[in-house]
Length: 252
Image 1 (cartoon, rainbow, N blue to C red):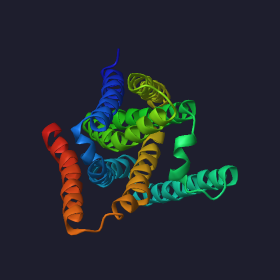
Image 2: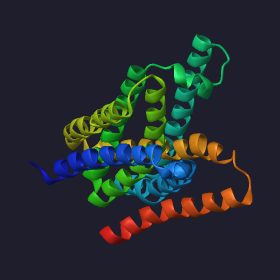
Image 3: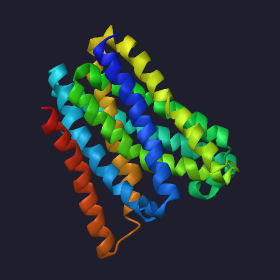
């Protein structure tokens, strides 16, 4: 079996399991108080991976910074429209109730299916990154794990509210995480025969990292405005950036 394919499968397995297990650790132990702070760490890791690794690699491969910038911009706007459509559908189906207020009424199966699809797409992104460079693949995986921890934590809460036992919630989230392996394997075979598409996929991946950090996570951080919380946020954003930078240095 190809070494790169092994890296992709390993990253999907370890990354998915690690994010679910760490989310479970934060949810079920004394580390619960650290949950909001993980959002700040994820922001740093996502932005560092996008601007320091993924975008430079995409530009280097394509040789056309303008084209990659255009794809990235289109990706950010595309994610904005997708989220608008999701919010619009929610309001029409459930009235004007805020999205977070209705989350307890979602079925566990809907959450698991949505999470599996998200993990599948993450697997394709991981495949594109590893097909470019192992260092980029590892940095991308780390950024995705950092983002997945608070997301998986939210999934845990929804499943528990839907009546799932803690052990079943953990097991089903672990099984859902395996979709990243499937996405990685399919992405590997599709992209291996279409290398020209990799820079554009990397640009879209960078766009997703930027959009998630700026549109979804940072507004959540602004809910806390006191000096102590702000200091923690800055420190953990720096820690997220440092994680990607140190990874790059160690693998250089």
